[in-house]
Image 1 (cartoon, rainbow over the protein chains, first blue to last red):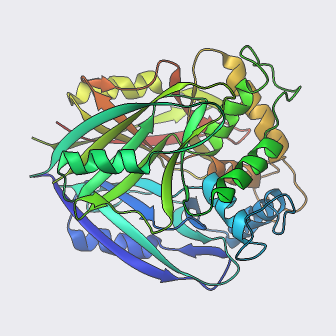
Image 2: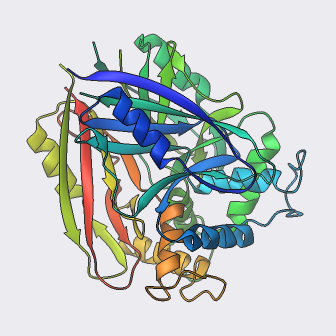
Length: 140
Length: 140
Length: 140
């Protein structure tokens, strides 16, 4: 019988960077006792985002940050929205370029990710924030 | 009992920019009488896209446009696909960089978005178009 | 009765570029005998991605590659992660900028895409790879 299971958790970030939530999500999928289906993650913010990224070499995420910091520089004088500082508007652009929701398969009672895939919250603000992530599981 | 509800609507854009569809989507979720589940939005076009963006200060979306217009300039001479004008191919690139589908949680009978999150259709063409958005609700 | 159907297939790419999987996905949706619902695609890799793109003029995808190759150049000296060559880290950045999962509507027993929409695996590595794509169908 197909059923819905919802869950959510809060992550405290300590500033710009990526935070691995793969284990947290996997534990919640296991607790939901869903054997197969879909786990949709949603981040309830617009200055942080979700990515699926290589999980073996931390340099991958450091290099992604290098690219984003150059492509969407803090303090861009063409931005008008800077109420919260020079990283405010760049955080919104970075969010639009990455993801706010992700649909992940669940099979055999667990998240069916590729070998090198991790799921990360990408905090785009320099100051730490509390970020809410929700899971909607549809499965059986 | 988990069930499927599908719906769709058409938005007439008046040229490049963002169009808030949060209220329209929320009304259709309410009408579907789904208490909790997943609402997947899909835009049936390749020169417009979907974004989740800050909904308080319109300058955020104006600045996002400033960034995109600079990163993916109209009339780029390296583009070969320009049958419909200098904004044709940039519209396809902008679409690839943002989203064609979004998975949104439904809880308590309504869209469970963050306080500052709005859902927008981003029209990337300078001329207005009719854009079809479909909703697939899976819930109970 | 809402049910879950899962399927997956492997695509052998022959190097950087886009590979049309619309027909393969459509055939699997048809075989699943789901009349309406949601088909979530997931790519189990971090150096290739999924896009929905214009399917009529191949120049669109060639121009998208032109743009990405310029925006995320191979051999960027600021990247530290280059164990697998000058296209290794750019492949991860390109993946973050596009999509790892897509939620596609199913209606009338088939994928309900727009007229000009195709679904593509975007191989970002210059060398060919075997790429696994999974489908999770939730429908009735």
